[in-house]
Length: 147
Image 1 (cartoon, rainbow, N blue to C red):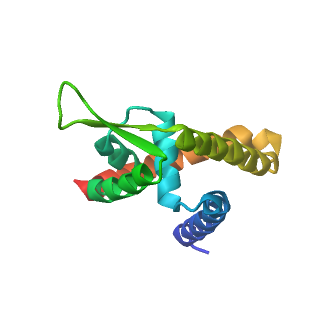
Image 2 (tube, one colour):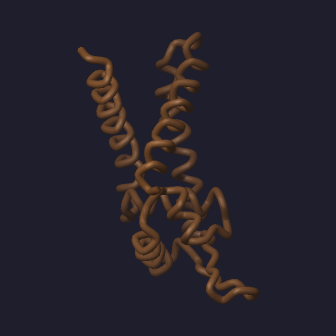
């Protein structure tokens, strides 16, 4: 098989596996996968803005705003307006959101630990390096498309 076709096939399979892992995690609390991603990013960087979230997730700012609004309405996220610049809004997790964030982080750590342990120990560094290179290449292509 051509290397590009093989690369695409392994990427497609990886997308499916990661999708399955993410689905098992987010479905249990009545929020969407994208809302799970938002909770994780807000939990990792309290005080983040909607613009920063959209940049990190490579998603349209208006789409992030709608999802954040749903998380605010369900009591997961709090939105605070900056006293210095009323146009700047920061996001942080409320106790319900913080609890969900901690559960997601814990559960995902265990799932990825299980996957990582299936890889031979002498290949661990190689896999980490390959994923780093893969992510960097994806980011370069995404940046070209957004320019």
